[in-house]
Length: 185
Image (cartoon, rainbow, N blue to C red; front, side, top):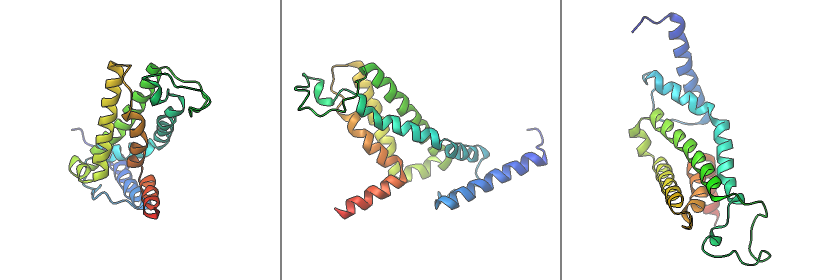
């Protein structure tokens, strides 16, 4: 390895300190000693934080797909009377467009989960039941997309149901709010 300049060392130390401060401000403790972690993990953590707006837009698109998709109950037969069947009234996307958008959203969410697993180390990642649930829901969603892509006449029952579950599992704030709501019931 070529010798590193004092500026590079200072920049790396500042980046590590920024990660500590970021975690402290968010009230998170991942049991990761950022001073000892490889620099690539520190960069991955910073990248994860920088992707917040992309993540927000991706989740909005992912959750909003339901308004533009053909309702699940319309795949095997006609939808019935348009006045009595609930729908958003928005134009419906073709199945291929819906699958492509959902696959794109799932890819971004998968990248985020993989980046999170790399930041935390696989041992810490798999100790969290929420992270395991995120991974499981993503795999089920990919499986549902594959089945629908191979057989378009198959009713995509699981994917619309998995979306809100994945939304709850991916966001700490939503999990806390959802938990409070469930306790109220």
